[in-house]
Length: 382
Image (cartoon, rainbow, N blue to C red):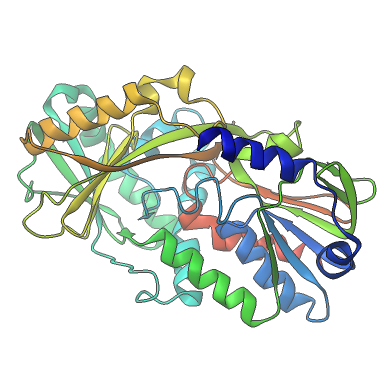
């Protein structure tokens, strides 16, 4: 089966478009949106509104977004205290907290377009779990929490952090910080809702077409070795951005994700961050989703190759067994997703030249800021 699948990919890659296919699906494109995730769909939607007579077409190489938009954990988050403290060691405070505010307002913007019911959104707050075997981090956060709250309040207009109790029976816990306003959602339903909104106003879709390279001077897209002329190119491929634009400050980062069998008595409907957000978990019904661990497998996970890291997955499974005090956990689903990181955690929203636009580098927070990035990107096309 694998050999047959690979041979079909090779056939498609080398297969010319017919005259009919070119005339109907690849001609007279005003805006070619590269990437069918949350940023690409938001950009397509807002560009179509800005240019109602334009032909706006989303190109996606798989049957649905291939990177992180439907392969993330569905966290509607804006920054746990230990993550923000880590960011403050590398970036100016104004930049760190303005990025936090961007995430918060991005979530509000997302919810203004997609209803909570449409994407199974639960805003029951997030929680950072500090374990006893990481006491130094716990003490560092404890000493800085009041200042973090004061600084965050200047940008968010509320203080997001407060200590609370371990109400879930987690093992080996030192302390717990509640993060006001965070939530969880269903990424697949969110993307499906965006697809419906885009289609309703005339956005078109071309799934299963890989862009081999860009001709930014054309501008044009090279697909199956043939150039397709377009009037504008809008790149929204996040962690894969350097495959098309090698000079961008985008570093791919792969995350592993596991979903267990039904092991909870009742759903949590809340999100949990551990160790600066490098490990995270939530419930999906009575199942538990756990992901991350890339800080312990940095060399292997600094890649844009979508593949499973069995060592990392074994680490996550063992971590969850210890945290829940269970030994009978069965993993029913496993996958990986590619994030776009960089020297800064802020996104790149840029007009590279006339007719070429870029919206990438979500910093692991695409759910929070993707809608906002797409909308801001559309403003550059006016």
